[in-house]
Length: 146
Image (cartoon, rainbow, N blue to C red; front, side, top):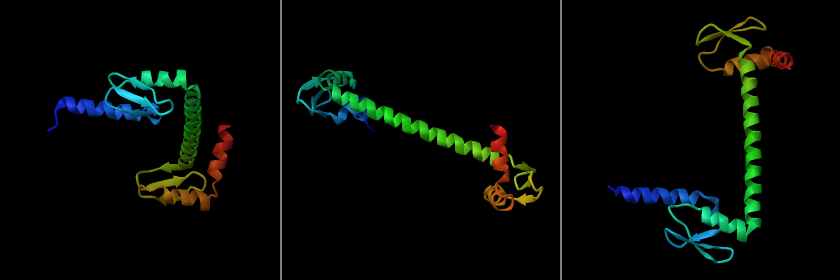
């Protein structure tokens, strides 16, 4: 079994290497790193990359601006993905509202009152909505929620 101190050291190294600053530094040992841009050696302590980041900000501000721009772009993409996920979830909820569920096997379409056996899978309900009721429920629900 590994010594507990060794595990902590390995965990700290893992966390250190996840920081974006390591893209611009070469690790010389557990407390020293060299800037790949200007070759300056810097000392860091307890796995903290603050010293390295401050060096980038003060000596290579264009790198930090680029990192910030990339982070902002990533955040915007994540926001758009989250919005798309929420919209899909909203549409799925409206789709399911088209049915009254009797149990885990049967549901009644509120548009045509047909009883559909679905046995836990909503694919047959989706098929009914799209092909039999032509998605009328989704259109009605979207119009009523505006």
